[in-house]
Length: 327
Ligand code: BMA
Image (cartoon, rainbow, N blue to C red; front, top):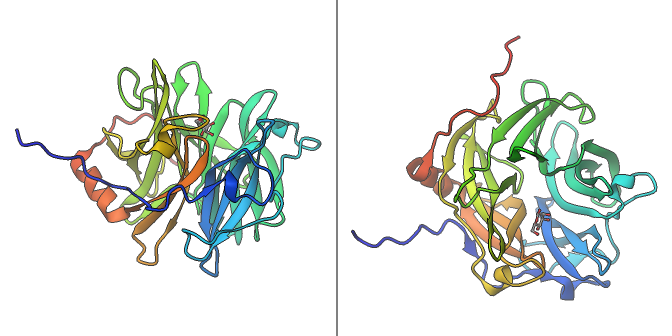
């Protein structure tokens, strides 16, 4: 048998990590798991999770013209937990994912609100990342790893998220007419159990990426080992008109901790993307990921290459969700 190397689907940027606590204008313990978006003027905005020495997190915006360096970081926290009005945020806000919703003319940030009942999913809306309209917790604990789709599906907004139940930690989708009331919950993708790389938990990583062939989903898979958890990245393709239906899912992981900044840190062996932007060619993915819960790194990939890899290496999984009732 000829020895073949695994295909490289994401290439790390040479100046990784691109952001860490030492770049911060105010005291910060770690900076990681950033949401990302490209603003109207082309600037890349990262909404970074900043953890203080209490262990509590908040968000701080960093802006850069090329999305790589010369970041201009807000002098003060951009969005702090507000436990007086939202006690679900008592222990911090974490892991933002940003979706621009054209219908609203607003960015919708889905994030983890961490309070005494555990982590839940909260939403906040903004037009400028300076003032925010909080919708509070929309998915009660334990739930996290959420992102909104950029447009309605069959008349409803759609939110991917990851509740934890006795049966495991799988990806679900829920629908809403108004972003406040959620229902029609459907199981989308399951952790695979056993010795799989994504056996113990899975969760959405950045928001879904729309392509003519379907929604590309980058998701993190967790494998528990004797020396701790390994967080790696896999890819799946969901149907455009039915994002709860998985068309193809890769068997192997495509990106995982290899470099020292990914292997060593507060939580070693973690590569955890929460955001991406697209290049001007409409194909290049700039994937921003938290490395070892300590810093922010960048890797680039290609939609075309991911789709062709899925064609060769993906399988159509058994349908896990219920069939949508017909009107
Ligand atoms: C997950 C999330 C992430 C974190 C990861 C590794 O459960 O809480 O915020 O990066 O664990 O610690």
